[in-house]
Length: 169
Image: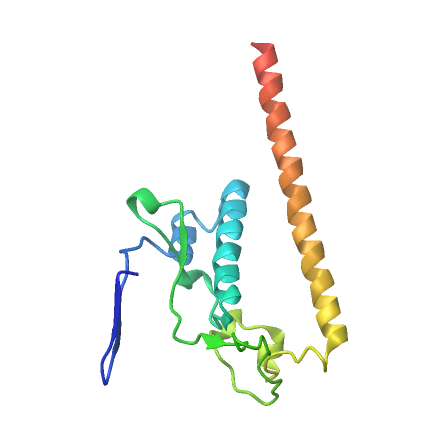
């Protein structure tokens, strides 16, 4: 970000000119990315979301259209955009989470909304729903472990494949 400014009726930000979003890239590739591309994209996307969460904000509109690829020297960087629905989910001074709410209307894009959002349930209250939090934490851990094992397997598969072709020459 190069500059930001607020007026009575508008907020302005001056940013880098970015490339296409992930949805457009997927369309250009006939809706297929290579495994390597998917792993790189997942890593970049998780880094962007983690960066936002460390600053006590949630995006609330995560979708392929809101991840853009950089241009020129930054073409290997994935950028997260469209913070119009973002919300502070934790008090930065106390670390206290926002209160649990039910009966909320849908926020974000219907196609990418979570099941809890469709059910009208707001952010999870850790004290009220520890079982749900534990189940989700285990699911996330298993997913990350799976991705890690897959990455290791692919690395050794391609590495050993390269060694075999080198030895044959």
